[in-house]
Length: 292
Image 1 (tube, rainbow, N blue to C red):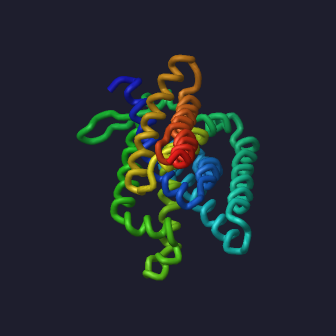
Image 2: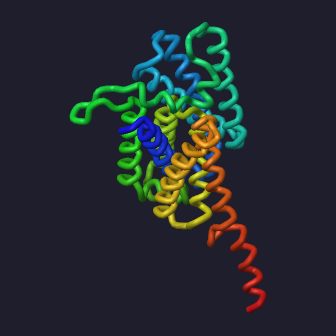
Image 3: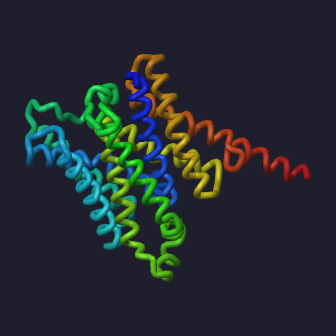
């Protein structure tokens, strides 16, 4: 596969995984949790480096996942004590991210581990960091990891689709039916953390947040059916990845930033033109009813 092809494939995998998880974040009214986890994983990455003194390896992934889960646990704990959920997210997000930034500034010295890289990522380097995969050959490490993450996400969503659906729309009913609501919540947060971490190094926090929230928000404007919403969100994620890449090539700017910008364009189109909840349809419908 060509250099351009690997970048597009990697970004598309991010778009699909994040798009699917983003639907449940939107429906559960936890959109800002995506922003929180995508930033607080920085603390896990820095901590893993300080322990091992290595900038690559599975320990970085494990450290980031632990940080993501710690974020979810702390937010839920504060919320259970009576703090509003958005306030809980804000407190945990800013505190853990600030600790990560302080550790980078004071403990990592001249090591190439900086906030700018964490926020924007560097997807152009993805094709050069390769691993040997049996039966397939040499593939970019980030692409291989994202393929595994996407497979995990798809298996978990399909295997427990009814449980995800009922706990998302009516947690009280789910509990009355014997579904372990809190367990499902933490499993979901684990999936969000894994998806975020796998995407984080390649594309940066800004694109992860954009892909988790915006395609799902756009899909929400087109349909009220969960299964269709999941498909649309994944498709919008891929379209944003492809469109953003060519925008970046056209104006010679950050690829990840352009992909995040492309998600905003798709949302704007959906907000204006969606036949169900779009701005134009909401304007035309009352006029039509008035004439009738």
